[in-house]
Length: 203
Image 1 (tube, rainbow, N blue to C red):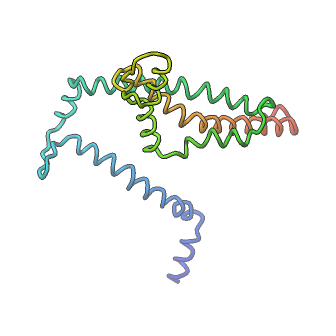
Image 2: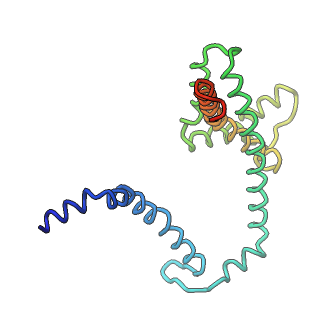
Image 3: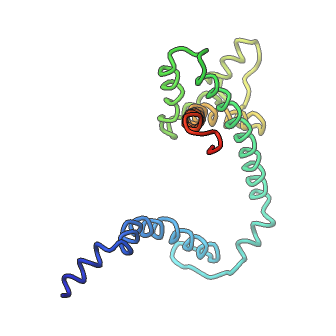
């Protein structure tokens, strides 16, 4: 009888959903909830090489008066705004062009646009750092020399360093966002076809 009860419990329609969801809940708790709680606890402590001392909200009070933190926060907000302004409209435009009949060899273009996303983050950062280096051997300063201009410290000036970061971000993620928008356009087309074949009042 106990074996039958266990078998019925395992094959029960009420229990099965929880069994399937259980691996996700465990991974979510281990890799998201626990690190989040642990990070908050660490933020209320003063951690040394060996000792840990509870200091309450003192670390947060320091952040409110820390100019470096304020600068980092402003730069992060600016970077977020600019990346959204560049990585939403332009990939959408490219997706519309790729979805039309004006572009030939679409498979080749899709592969070329997606290749930057496959490049390692370390390699991408190193390449762009060498490209925008302050030395004369950097590609940007070689271009400046060809134009008869002196070498420039690209990564030590705020607006030029932001341009370098935005260039790297757009180079890496424009193709990915374009493929996302192309998938959305195809889904819209399929929905329109299914609606027209049944009834427009159901769409």
